Length: 242
Image (cartoon, rainbow, N blue to C red; front, side, top):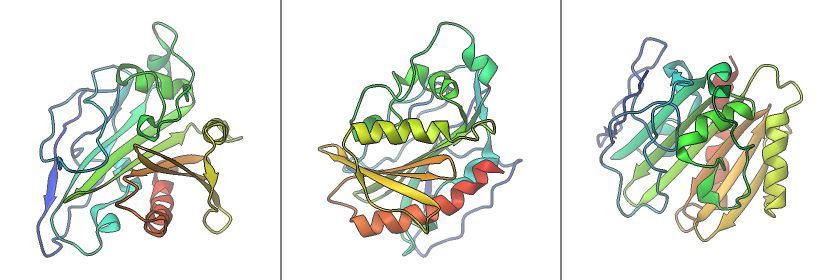
């Protein structure tokens, strides 16, 4: 099974975007999936501070799941003022049995504190298998670009059996080990940790067991702006748990 990789442009004037459902085709692909292969996208802004990870390679344990695309940030969430923008998106569901076959994979998150390496897997070629081994049932990634400003979101949704939120606990402990700073949360339903380095800044939310990460260039996004977008991301992420 494959996913398509591409880029959509939103024309000036804030034209409406199509609705997505189970029958809709998956728009674009980005980032480090060892899940499915596709065609290289175009139009990524060269001056953007956040660079998506390399194109994924084919593997059998992940398949497209457009139903969950509504669980990711949409264009109007990130750029409410409208204007020209681009986005690259991937949304997949993992088959734990297929992902568990073959050689044993590393435990994640691996020993890295670089914001650009999130979700801290060994390589693009092993991402899906390693995430499945960590208890991820589905995950999505979207990179929004407008001019020189870029925002990347990654959502990791746990399996239904993760009643103790072990996935969230593993990433929370890892971030604390990286000296991430607690920056509050949203209405008592979530807690946030912020990690900054020369590659940018990473704001991670733990929302009802779902791990949501926003990555951006420090000079392009203020703390207040990222916090506002994260609150929207938390609300949308509930789609992954339906």
